[in-house]
Amino acid sequence: FRMEKTRKRFTGMVISDKMDKTRVITVVNMKKHPIYGKFVKTRKKYRVHDATNESRVGDRVMIEESRPISKTVRWNLIEIVEKSKD
Image 1 (tube, rainbow, N blue to C red):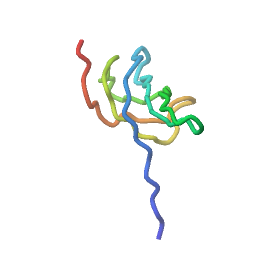
Image 2 (cartoon, rainbow, N blue to C red):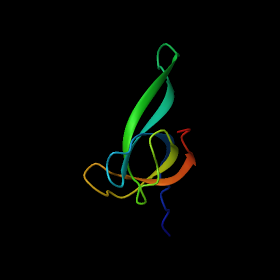
Image 3 (cartoon, rainbow, N blue to C red):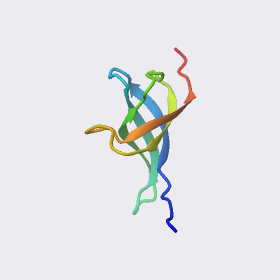
Image 4 (cartoon, rainbow, N blue to C red):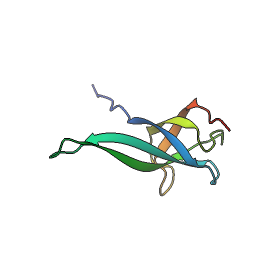
């Protein structure tokens, strides 16, 4: 019997679609400062594999961790949650 590990999922905003089949996503989190208790906004960029080139800058997307696809890409685009207004 083997427990299957669940994969991490995040939602973020597409900030670059200039590469072919790769998008740059920024994920914003709120973390509580360990000493002062203030909530601090943190941002992290992820390179995401988008096989169909369907997402555009400004789209809100869901991503999931995957096996390494290239040197920097370790995430897959799961779905476009919300299209950009443009």
